[in-house]
Length: 136
Length: 503
Image (cartoon, rainbow over all chains, first blue to last red; front, side):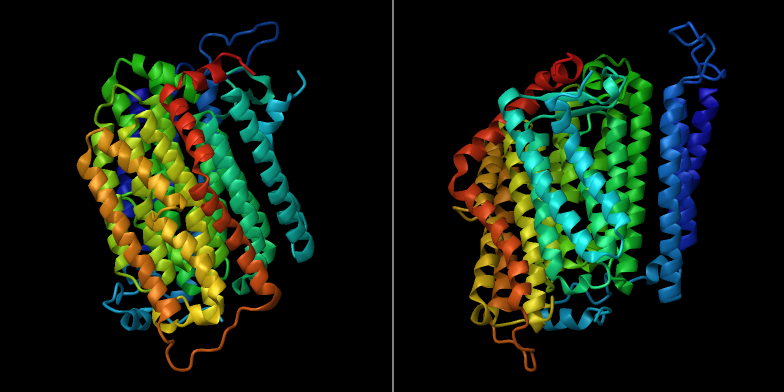
């Protein structure tokens, strides 16, 4: 079972890296989401698959019965899922806002924060290369 | 069991900003009340942090188990000298930017979001400094990260969207790598508690896998700390944020990464991974050189300062790479000095922009004639950054460079000294262009005056005073850093405080 999870982790991680190396922003976003899922698989595999029964302690007992799943990775995975989901949603909105403002989804064309003319040889040339100030 | 004084001291630095975040969110749009929340929370946090440092100095490492779940099973909060001092300096930064932001013109219309996000950022940073286990560290990293995303786009400029996208994608990748490293560390040792892991990691049979964990953690924290060659997100993002946001980012975010590296290298992997020192040697040298050369190539104040953050991180990595108690003390002193100085420089940049109308050096000039006070308040952190005696940067650099010579790493110390000279070049460049030369035709007259000027210069002067105090009255700070270095190198006190049930 761990071998299968490891294989799945590798596949997801590889696909995520491949997507994130693309210039297209939606692909980068999909890559990020896959990367988050790969990490969650890694947590589950790291905790070993020791059983599949729900990890509930029966009344009167102090230990889990044999065959119960490891509860800790599940708690960690749940936390990680929530965080990955929230941050994924934020990046999605960010990509949409970039599209709305610049009409481009090509990462190479996004040069607003780092304009092509910089670094420049002198103060005047550098000031000319800066984008016109967007804020009043 | 009733919560003791120690429990409260350790929980407050997290609870206070979290409470302030909730309160400021509930008061959305009622700016006066939100301002009061920020100021009150930062003042209380400052008092709490001072009490925490006093407690740690008096009693050594202190720890508490949330909900009384015994370590290593529950959530542990730990403070040693390093952690407590970091919390104190965080509180100081919180107060400084909270005051400065009231005068920041770009903040108009954004303040309703600024207050809760700032509090959340501080909660994440303070939590990171006190977290006693790896997964909690990850959660606090994410709290800090999501708040910083929101803060970075405050102001709504187009270039900020570009910056935020690069910042978000590269930082999310780094934290995901961190998460994979956590999964592997848990798989190897069966624990996430740092003290417990410190005991179990040397006994791991597969030391190759332990090395992989160490490498992944260093890569993830290194990306956070903006070290060579993982720093690209920083100069792409920091210069677009509005001044108080840039100041709190420059002060705290990269230093959380450095702190995490320091903790992991000294606590979990002090032996058995011989490659860490040489690898960090290269990283430190590359970070110092690339950062300072990048700064020399730019002519916009915030871009220059952003590259200097990178270059200064290199000095801290020198301390971690050498890892003798004295070198670690140097790293601690450097972090504390750097947070104050760098935040102050970004605040000064905000004041310069207000006084001179621009961040571009070409469009500034004659500020010394118009406002000598601003010039003096710029000179203190700028010369301290370059490491001129008798300011704080001199002592921090002295510690780091001397530890390099003591360890026989002469080249690294030489690079550190050369970087200092180039830092001075950048600072003199800002001075000559912004304060000394005649301004170009048609520059507006002096704009910074009245209560706005007071609100901007007050936190700058306060932070400058801290720099001067560390510089002129070094003894207690150096002694504190040396003790912190011994504590980090010794690590037994930390492990005993967490696992020994000592309260």
